[in-house]
Image (cartoon, rainbow, N blue to C red; front, side, top):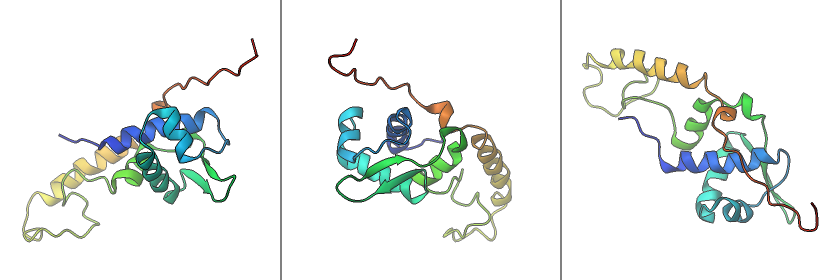
Length: 145
């Protein structure tokens, strides 16, 4: 079974909050409070996403994180690779990556799995962050109808 870590789920929740207010800066603490995800986990997600320039981090007293790109331009492949590393069905499926398998040079399956790996990546490239975002409810401002 192919299974992503909980970190990928958390990233979608965090990105949904950031996308709801495109351009607004959020601290990890505020995002943790608004999403219910522990702050250390939110900080880890944001750090990984900022390395791939999916979100932008700004340092300083008025710093925080904001969406860098439009959600309809971020592929699920990019998200998974930012959070989980390279997409590979088996450890030797990606023929462009060195493997530590001691029989890789003799294995007849290596090339076969590559075909499956390419098909999975191709399918994930057709799905975008905008397809996965969760509608976020904005807190109502007091005193306004």
